Amino acid sequence: LRQVYDRFGKEGLEGRGVHTGFSGFDDVFSHFGDIFSDIFGGMGGGPFGFNQRRRKAHDLQMDTHISFEDAARGLKKDIEITRPVPCADCKGRGYPADAPPSTCPECRGRGKVLYQQGFFTLSNTCTSCRGAGKVVTTSCDTCKGKGMTPARETVAVDIPAGVATGNKLVLRAKGEGGGEGVDPGDLFVRIFVAEHDLLKRDGAELYAEIPVSMVDVALGSEQKLSVLDDSIRVKIPEGTQPDAIFTYRGKGFPRLQETGRGDLHVRIRVVIPRKLSRKQKKLLKEFAQAKG
Image (cartoon, rainbow, N blue to C red; front, side, top):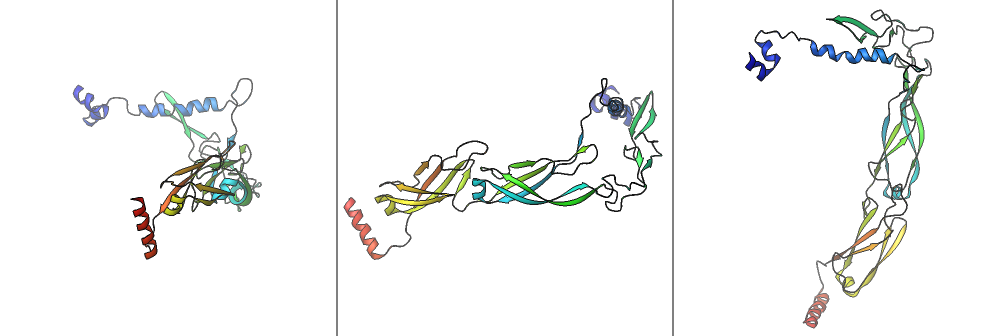
């Protein structure tokens, strides 16, 4: 039996018809939390009690989409939300004022059911009233006993410059509505920023690519690049090599919750023509001969 216990524990012994005497032992300790909550939970504020924190209703989350440019500028945006608020007819109670709930017959209003297990008297949440101590006999017709009804509302969201996809803004007390003794929840607005056709972003750094001809990089040229609300003149020196990168300090994206902006990095992409005319070919051959 010792070998069986070392390998399989008490379950192995019980499988062989040996009773360890500890059946239900884990269940005893699993209810200690209920006992302590009964002891300490009943102590409210006062010189000898514990101050209980106010309960808070559920937080809500919604998504909003903005353009690349709006993320750089920042904007104030009105969004429509639908959130549960306390029922106006029953004041969030879930039952009419003239039909109050009655005392739960199962727990006699305590919200807990006591039962004996060995030397211990344990308590568990009453399943009939779910710990409320009272049961509703007549539900509110408007909210069907839920105590909450949906309400549509327009809220203003102040989106700061420099936000990125995944950033969240918090609107206090705009989540699930609270009631008596319950604070309203918060609303979390998750931001999604649209991609830009030419600009790529990494934090506050911006990256752009300019297609130029081989003549432009050989002789030098100047290209115009529109970046958000600004216009950048990219001067390409004579003899610039393919994939060269020019950096413009402070011309990138605004830094979120910081001062200043990131940098703009412009990459030169040399475009090789797929077809050449006879005259172009002749000129290139003359160029090759002149270069030796």
